[in-house]
Length: 151
View (cartoon, one colour):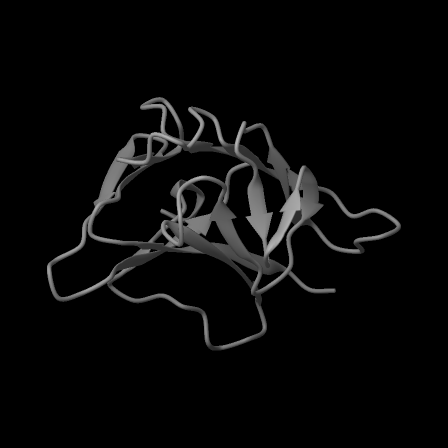
């Protein structure tokens, strides 16, 4: 039970746009004609709102079936079922949120969980990534958007 780092790997297609607001910093993910738009977002805040509303922390454009506040990610302290800090997904959408193909309303996320928005097709999609601090393979590269807590 060591310290963990949490990331979202976000993938979009040619029609989706994504912007990410972390504190005072704003990022945009785009896709060229030849490459899938993809980035890693380091999580560090207590809560994130994901949806199509401009005021969401992670905003996806061009998906009208996505809810304005599609789901929340909430950092949750250890409990009897989850012995470490973890992020919990809380769905608040009309069309649902699917994790690993199953529609969920509330779910503690685990490493590798694939999140898809109901009504939006295959993309955008998000993979939840959890890495132990002792692991040397953290996904820091030029495509990683750091948490404002780690600046």
